[in-house]
Structure formats: structure tokens, C-alpha cells
Length: 110
Length: 114
Image (cartoon, rainbow over all chains, first blue to last red; front, top):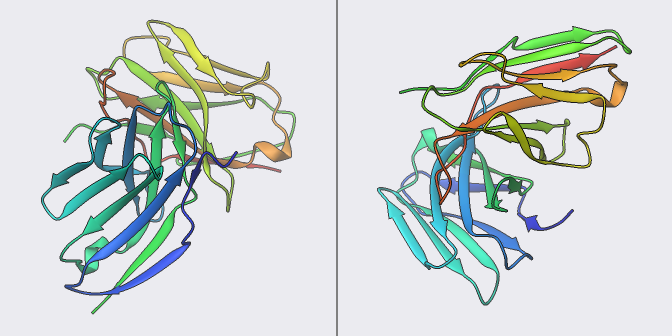
């Protein structure tokens, strides 16, 4: 099942710079897209979401962009902080269930 | 901030035994879910539950699995006869409503089948 794909297993960014995490999907019927952050030994924590009818949503340091024609979304974190180091999951709402990507491990370097 | 609580954090069980994983969703939430993550793989949907019945289930959720909301606070996942391949992290989630309301996850139960 490759409906939601995160092609980068890891990303390393310097503190204070922008982190960009990417996600691709294949199903045009997804109604919402969400980003979750996960620390070891904890469950996924909701970060930000976007409706399929929007192209941008912003919440503080986090912005999600949706490109429906490319079936692509991205999460921008700016400025990146050491506490942002975690695994980030892209998820699509189907709509009753969430379909997850494989995750991207983000490491913020001082 | 309200949170989803799961117990136990780690469960070790012999193959063929029954296991019950417990969850206390956020109190005013109406929709409940179970997901699992096998080591090194994606988080996978198992089942959704609303208004005291299953609303959707995946192919993984076969006759060996069942869910129950026995009272106003708990939500349980039962595996009747565990297999080695059931070893995974099991996450419970809940959400207040539909229309973009996010699912909130517990910290999971690590199930190890010997």
C-alpha cells in the first residue's frame, strides 16, 4: 500500500534554518492531510493539518503547503529548533481512517 | 491538556494466548481507533468505532480481533489467539468529531508474542 509516501527517510538541518519535509500521495479522494511528530516511546502528536480544498495552512513556526495537481504536500518548519528533532509522519484522511507515510527522521544540529 | 491513555505500556504473551489492550480516550471524544506499527513498517489502520459499533475495519482486523467500549471511558482491543506476527506497537486514538478534527494518539502498547 503506497498511497502515501515520504521518500526521504532522514533529514539533517542546522538550528535556525528552515526544515522542509515532503510527502506524496496517489488517492485524490483524501479530504484532509495531517502532519504528526513522534518522539521515541511516545505516540504520534498532531502538529498541523490542511483541508484538500486549501493550498496553505500556517500555525506559528509550522506551515503546510498542498499542491493538488502534483499530489504533493510539504511541511515547513522555520526557524528549526533542537526540540524539533523527531520522526515526522504525513497522514491522509480517508476519511474515517488515517493512511500514514513511512516517516522522515528530522535531526536539528546546533 | 487531555490525553489518550493506554495500558499496559508493554505486554508479553505466549503465542495462542488471549490479550486485551486497554485505552482511555479523551473524555468528550466520539470516534475511537486502533492502529498498529510493526517494527520498521508504517503505522497501519486496524479499526474505527463510533456510536458503539465498528464503522470501518482493515483486512488485518480478522475474526481474531474484537473491540469493545464496555463503559463510558474504556476502549479495548482483544486478540483472541495471538500469533508471532501480532508482535507490534498498538496505538489507540480518538477524536472529537469529523470534518478535519485530528485524531489524538496514546503512547502505545508494545505487544511481544513469544
